[in-house]
Amino acid sequence: MGHKTPLYQIHQQMGGKLVDFGGWDMPLHYGSQIEEHHKVRQQAGMFDVSHMTVVDVTGKDAKAYLQYLLANDVARLDSLLGKALYSGMLKPDGGVIDDLIVYNMGNWYRVVVNCSTREKDLDWMHSQIKSDTKEFDITLNERADLTMIAIQGPQAIALTKTCLTDKQAAILPQLSIFQGLAVGEWFIARTGYTGEDGLEIMLPNNEAEAFWMALAKAGVSPCGLGARDTLRLEAGMNLYGHEMDESVSPQVANMSWTIAWEPASRDFIGRSALETEKQAGIREELVGLVLRERGVLRAEQIVSAEGIETKGVITSGTFSPTLGYSIALARVPKSNATHYQVEMRGKWVSVERVKPNFVRQGKALV
Amino acid sequence: MSDIRKELKYLSSHEWARVEEDGTVTIGITDHAQDALGDVVYVETPEVGSRVNVGEEAGVVESVKAASDIYTLVSGEVVAVNDLLQDTPETVNNSPYDEGWFFRVKPDDLSELEDAMDAAEYKEMLESED
Image (cartoon, rainbow over all chains, first blue to last red; front, side, top):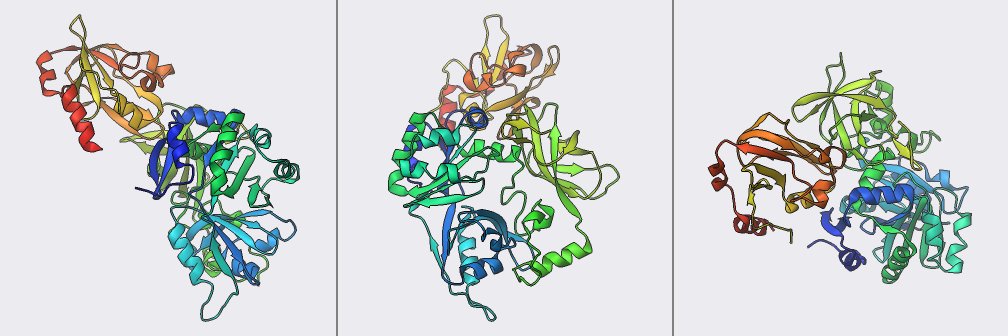
């Protein structure tokens, strides 16, 4: 038996196909993953993402601690209350322990990390509070008391508004993209993992069921983690354990933009390893692939470019419901190749290279 | 619990076979299989006129989750394939035993079906997997 979110019974009642996901019993879909995908692109869908780990970082050294812990610089959040930042949390050798989002909560920060990496993340975060050379006056507080619901799609904000109190709804017009604000015990953020506009809302566990049901009544379709994966892949977003992990540098996972090199005086974990790697020359890159004929590209398939001996690998692949054909992200040796060969079920199939960003805001980009 | 039809024969790889009135045999995948696969996005059936043999790959079904080989329960010549599956592969999810059939074989030897499981045996196998 896995961990259960406060919405577990609701998922069962709504016909969710529950599967193990990083130790949690989570809905894969409620009937059709593809229909749920289309709902999000065209209207609005909601996802129970309570399995993700929320950690509040408080104390007078919270900023300094995160500036040391993360490759991106939380100082970039200083200008705007509630602003969110995407970052890798790296090992000294530059490998990615996890990718995460951190919100500026005023004089403290809220960090959201993955569920499958929860234990090692928390262990690592605790271990970095005090070392031979550094000591930070901070406290880490895991917020298991919060449920997280993502509502995504072109109608997500309008439909969610009808389920909020006046006070909560008053927040919505103030939210810029990638910003979240607290209202009482609720935290309402304009973030997501689908390539659509929408919200991620954290709320007390005991209010979760009523809110989910209100959203369903308002016309927001329940969606499982299956659709969440095809949506994020269409949007070209990374998934930890696929596009990067502890053996993969953020510099070969389209995450160079999340490495804040300036100010040069900021010492963050992994910095010197990334600098060495950069000086030596980055050898690999993450590219998008499309297969416009039949067949589905899948993770771990081998990718080959003409004239290049070193092979690449598909990190995530799926059938794209929006495009009607298969798309993938692949880590390959750097080159100007416009086409690759992928080994699919014993046959080499030609695929086209594209920017790793396939669909956004309901529109095809390839 | 998934739907298991009494009149059909089954393989452990989750294909079913139905003997038609004209003596041909229709092959498809079970309700359990479509449920485990999730949304089906492509189906590759053998060509009409080609031969399929027991134990050899006869087609492929690809879903959002995985690709699976399709096996036949009887060897013989393919006399019909379900063209509906090319444009609406989701038919396999919606109607695995009826509209979602894959192909039809003129069997060399119908007694090959005796090696397959009946509904009770298939049900028992599924239950033992849970």
